[in-house]
Length: 199
Ligand code: 5GP
Image 1 (cartoon, rainbow, N blue to C red):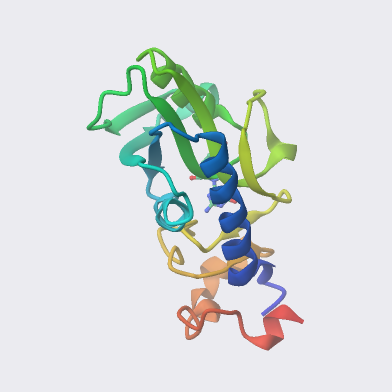
Image 2 (cartoon, rainbow, N blue to C red; image 1 turned 135 degrees about the vertical axis):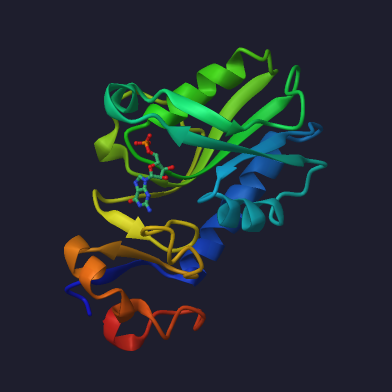
């Protein structure tokens, strides 16, 4: 199975790192009421675990975006499919991302939200694929610096599947996984990958 996928982050490592980030955010935003903005769908799992590690009177909100195809895709311009319910004017906004890759989506998002006159806008991402960054981006909180691999699990999908894996895998053979998606079946809810994958 290792020729198709490999274990990158175990669920215990993810839990521990989120606990640390949550405590740092609690300290940094003392006496403030941040609004955590989750970009659907991938970051919803991270958001759910992160908010339970932050001891602040925060609120959450959701945005759904879709990338434009063709040339617009390279510019990072996105279409907003679902906008925020809350007015973020004068608020401390924390954009919650599952992964920041080229940074194009994130830089577009920050420009959209900054135009609404918040008090502050910062990013918290579980994974930072920094080697792929095209546009420089100030990321305040990052879980792990992710290698240049396609990753799945813990909210991250492979053609809409595997978001429910409690750990994160790197896909070593993308066509292989398309051909044999069943290699990942049977241990989705085990909590940890099987031994033959983690050795
Ligand atoms: P960016 O605009 O930073 O290049 O792309 C960000 C989006 O691309 C992420 O929110 C995510 O939806 C998707 N993405 C980038 N890398 C990966 C990856 O390794 N795995 C998965 N499942 N999605 C990815």
